[in-house]
Length: 308
Image (cartoon, rainbow, N blue to C red; front, side, top):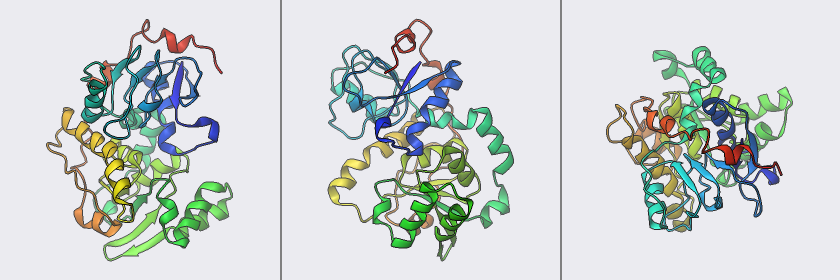
């Protein structure tokens, strides 16, 4: 089955964009092929993760993806909407003349259910006083990394561009900074998902301007806080907040002990630390997302498509 991902042809390796295929493979119980959802002419795909509804074409299926901002043009004709990321995306689909979607949840929240990552959880998750002694983890959105101080930019480059143990070690050392509250470790979003998960599990709290940094932490029940950098322009800030609010509001829509999720973001890492964790660390129920998995007949179009 073909699962749509973002800009595969450009070698884009942001970890959040590649959560989809392993999750779909696990929960749909069949092998998948990652396909570039941005191709103008392609076979139908299942779009499962990311803010990529603007890339959806007639014939596609959507299971958990979202849109980037309010007022976006979204294809609704001939598209099967099984589930979307959150209630704000659902409203945008209706505004474009599409169906009412009631199943919410970012499929990235299911990452902790995959056996290999569940094993990482058992082996690396910190508890109690051990977590209090651990460093805070910061995962910047890939587009925000260029605004960081030169030392942190170099740390990001070393972490993501080299397979050498020495350079990776140096990148991690250079990515550590100090705050009044303790050590802060900065991690490149271009690292493999396995490494991101390990860092999340061994952090005191995950602070992220990468949406799937928050999603990953939430999946494993690790405290998190949304960081929205103060160096962004007002236009960037207004447009970019949509997908984070969509995700956070989806948590209040799910059957969870979280109650009303704190929607506040911090403009600096220090402010995020002062604000504390976004929710109480309870992993939301994803029964509605799992129940919305399309049956065999509905997903034949994505399975039988020719591979481009």
